[in-house]
Length: 356
Ligand code: AMP
Image 1 (tube, rainbow, N blue to C red):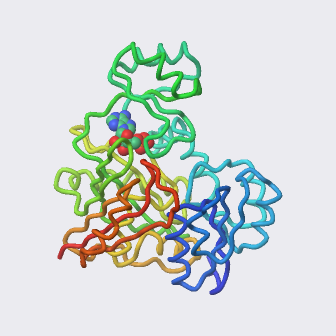
Image 2 (image 1 turned 120 degrees about the vertical axis):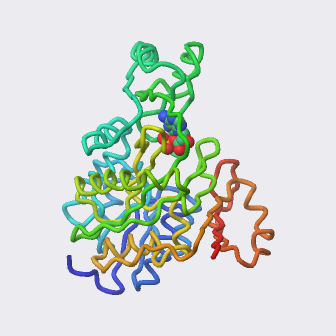
């Protein structure tokens, strides 16, 4: 792949904090970014050269956006694939539409991971109430029901303790196709973040041990500790196989449960990931910069960790009000995303600390 010329424009679909940090990394390498997102108050647009506010399924707006860009990438996986497929003939969409269609459908994603050699918890799909009841009986309790599409940050999922939870859960999940998963008795959660270049070269960052609260990532720590570390090699083999099968270019994340049975695949994200924010200060090259390098055909940067220990805490909801306290710690790297409205489960920023 010929390197994208300096000053070229990278289109980014999605306008949240991931797009913001991608745009900042792109600027460092001499590129301009054009953000495309449906929302008002788009924090990626605040640091980008151009912004198109339009729906993800608006074919006219997408075509005009493609005309203004040299390549397109995305920072969000719940983007309708069909309208993107239409512009894919006119411009490079990297890492492509196939990773999106896989990651936005939990059933397809888990089946794909199994095909690539991964181990998952027991799961099945229920498309109607009868299947939901029968499926829960088959999986057994406790279980988790998740909407098959459009889930993120623990949204669209409900724990099922016994039969008495079923009717309410089916209603609360919107009477839509769901997958039912056996609850995993895990010792820890971790993620494998890799970058794959256009020539197929893969580099991995150290895996972080991730702590979730109410389905939302609260903290990532590197090193992840012996329990997780003994499972990373196997998890990397699966992540590399998934990336290879998708002929993936860019940063890709796979999330795992560390269990007595080894690493259990939970889900993948075809993008930079919250559990990799620590790489901005804690690695030689951040996930954001390496994603830009990969999609622009530049050599990949070193992914080595630069401290003995790195901790990243998310600032969620009102945590953002404690900014002054975080700033008074001279060793803390404080990132505020610039979102105007605080909501209880909204990611407002993060803080990274390096220990040497
Ligand atoms: P997900 O949206 O699938 O990433 O789920 C968000 C979080 O919910 C995960 O990071 C886990 O903490 C928890 N979770 C999801 N699925 C399961 C499961 N099958 N067993 C146990 N915990 C789960």
